[in-house]
Length: 209
Length: 209
Image (tube, rainbow over all chains, first blue to last red; front, side):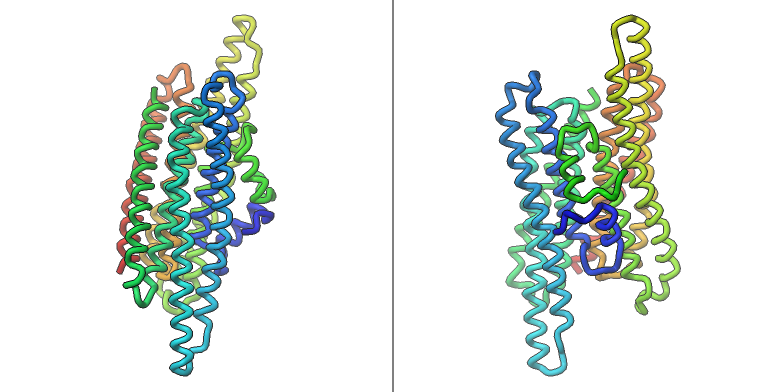
């Protein structure tokens, strides 16, 4: 994904009817925002006397979140590429039986590939949620709402990614070989949603006191 | 908010320990992404023969979503400004009793102002959710997952904004005059969450069939 684009141009492209970026890309970007916000809270914790005892742990988490940001950005780019491959397959000729069969095979494999990318987004969301949980518990208390926003964004990123897994899975002509794939990632998505809702509830409680 | 910034620079700024952008800004940006995705689905519906009957309605919704995008961007910018005003108040001198009183008054009013901006983000989220509901029902069926991602992003934007209302409200020394304000916006936030979860559930069901 081209991060040298201006925010304005990205928003214009997202709004337009061009094939990419679409919802899968936006979901991955939402994960990126969450990783960046988590990193920010680490940066606002590191070097503060009050948080000296947790400094090493927070520095480790920061490194993990910086890696997660990179991963989400790569996945956002791969989401665009995967969708473009589906579009390419749709444009293949379908006059003869042979052409039809070739086109169908290309469609099936590109559609499965387009489901794989958001599935990886869900996994990346699942991976960073426990980091955000520790940051909420031990990081800078003044930035607790920022950690909370990161948690909400991870929930939305996982949900948006699951919708993209599902629409691609539903487009497959032969779903049988991929049923376990769907069950696995639906379960991961449900776990992320459950955990993010629980964590947000805890953060809201803390902010009230 | 300066939309001429590159995505990379925005992500760097969000990750850094600079006062802005922070969670409130990211929540408003998340609302922007939702409005853009909704606009995209309108653009993918308008001009298609299959959707001729709903064209006028979808065109109207597109206009509303384009306005919502602008509103979210303005709120993202105002969130930065409001937080900077709180930071300014914190830096005021506090040697004499008079200075202390002045500083406290500046802190109270800037903190309330910093709660007002995310409260407006919640209202903007509440406003566009019914538009997304119509788009999910009548817009391009091939883009249903994109509408779903927009709905998830609106949920996260409202939740992130509420966390920012709450942290600012909690920082007020005298909360009494603002209790109704909190109750009103907590109720709006809960309505957005409930509606977005219901809508996402319906979209997931539709995508399974």
